[in-house]
Length: 244
Length: 303
Image 1: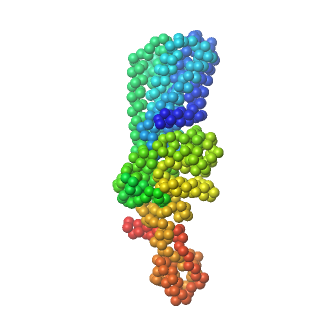
Image 2: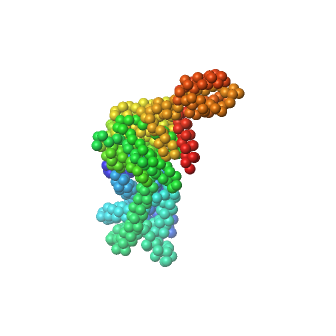
Image 3: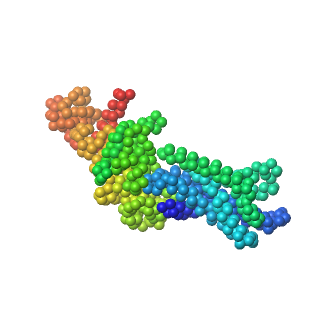
């Protein structure tokens, strides 16, 4: 049953204009713009095409992940979450299914930007690097999916939408997904390296550099996973208690 | 277990802040019965439905469905519901939605049958959020029936429907009840409660103020209405006539609700000041107003 639920929610998410714009369309367009306009200013165009590919793939995955929460908040408002509670589907399976569906919708966002990198910008990586990139970044998106779910259960659809987009843009900028953190002043760069989006993209950057993620990167991401996971659980429990 | 009623409320209380939404409700619905929950807006109908489905926990008292807690009946797929706050689920087609819900239940109706019963044939591939208000309401009815539940709970099911759709809806509802299923619906339409329910439970201010067939409610509130032109006559004293339970003067016409119309008419004739007299059966509306008004007075005295 949980498989059916995941299928239903994935189908619904992929039909969402919000997903198509923030999760799929914008990252690809921004990637192609950022890497093909003003090339002269960039001394190392080929490297930038790889760095930005990872950054924009992370940005797209982030958008898709937090978008899960917007969907939940909307469904709460439409009474769909109540309707699900009066089916035999276990409440736990609904939350789990929603999380899994959110994880699945992250994939097309990742794949679209990587495809643009390979096919349009001529990025070439070793054969092992592509699946490693997809796998690591797919897993790395989990804290953001949970953060979105937490918002969705806690807040109204409108607030969730605004907050999610605010966080998305804020985290993308400070995390260096749009512009490399090397351009930041030193103090900001230190902060940036503790933010979740930066460490998320670092999973990809270490892979394209041919190495494994550092222990620090994994530790910071696990920390954020614990925070967002607790947030999602607390929000869900609170939403379940205040039924009406 | 086969003997336990479909629905059983025992002294159920529910507070929201300081508002007593449900205040000591006792209610039993036998299997196979169709019961209407009738009340004004804010009478506690939706709260009662929420408690029944286990969406809310009572502050005191017990709610049982088929002899067990609501959550167990829901988990076993014995309950289907159409909620009042439900709106169109977005980005999903009618068929996708109905098939999904059906698959969640152990003994669902065939999807085509559900779609036929709800009057959605031909709309299967349309997106739910692109249907008209009435069509979307029928989708919610389909979602309630899809699992083939033994107990169907419908909270204000006809609110967005026009006359024709309403009639079609009730025909489907009766067909489903006719298979031996239990139906509980809430409404503030008296005619609907009277026409389609075996029994009417009148809720007011969170309490059950009457419970019985439409006929019994009319009897309980004073079975006959005697009305006549007062002319210049005085309304004082009419209350004391035999059989009279209630007097109302509207636009020069007195309306006496009475348990014994014959005695009332004979007494009125004795007074001699009667013009254009008419004896009618009290409508359910009269009964309803009498029941809730009496309750208002009672509450005012009590507080």
